[in-house]
Length: 104
Image (cartoon, rainbow, N blue to C red):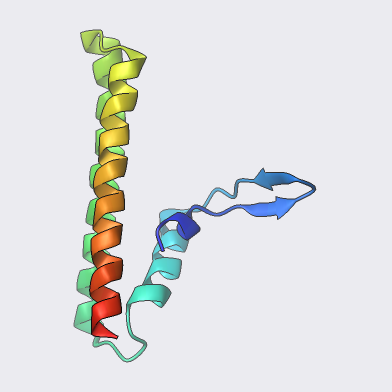
């Protein structure tokens, strides 16, 4: 679910990365997880949560870069931090997939 939002089209043996706006990602995400008949308030709150999460991750990525520059963190320390966030997201994905499977 989450990985497919990254974008990318295969062609000629190479994967070309497609840069997407947050708006494009929101549209794809909402189509996948929000029922078409969801009330407007539910859609609005889901959008707020989506953008809040995106803003938080943007801030985290910027903070890692600034910490490396301003506080002497090594590239390895920064990578380890971001990998930890990646592991948390993978764990959440597994939990969500199990929940969706159990409810369907």
